[in-house]
Length: 87
Image (cartoon, rainbow, N blue to C red; front, side, top):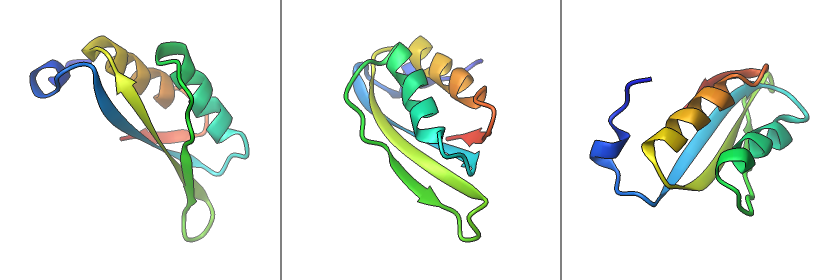
């Protein structure tokens, strides 16, 4: 993954992730589990369902320490089975 995080961000910094997924009762736990592996902390993600209830978004803010950490999190969050997009 070629990104320019290191050009635009000064580490460490706060960084928001928004994970868009099909409705999944365990999505928050799955997202937090991935984030905990790379950025341990106490997280309180917010969840918003779509209008029809088919999808949901999980927003979570982390303290990023490196470009590599962010790239790994984008990759691993996208690999969660019900995830459709990571922003």
